[in-house]
Amino acid sequence: MVVHVNAEAPGDERGALLAFLDAERGGVRRALLGLTDEQAATKPSASELSLSGLLKHVSEVEQSWLARAQQIAPDVERTEENWDECFRLAGDETVESRLAYWEKVARQTEDFIRSVPSLDDTFPLPDEPWFPDSERVSMRWLLLRLITEMSRHSGHADIIRESLDGKTAFELVALERGETWG
Image (cartoon, rainbow, N blue to C red; front, top):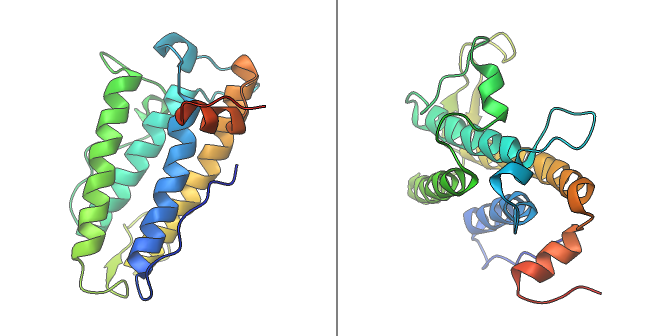
């Protein structure tokens, strides 16, 4: 679903990248509009994905990449033992609490990106088998990585929501605006 992102002010590459990131976050947020936690946890396809699971995943992924860029530990360390918790709400987690957490992470991402001296500044990728040895990536790369992640999962969210109740991304944008579609 194309959502218009306003053109950046001349020379505001950070603002443009942050705006595209937020537009993609919006796809996941909109897919949850009007659903109960139970509905959001439903897995209506052959996939193990649910909307609440996607919400948890994308908020954790964004926070973990932000932590890597700051070279600090992420809020949650995922291992083989707890990887399954990445895609489902656990304990007292709710859609509302995860949305609030993600909003906090989004503000932290924007504050951090706006504070770095240059988008060309780099940070090391973690020492994991799926990353090249001693690779460094830029803050620009970080934003593009996050946009890619959010875009992929906002598409998943569209499919899951439409499978749940037939609502399309167009209807959800209208709903978000307080309008009707069609």
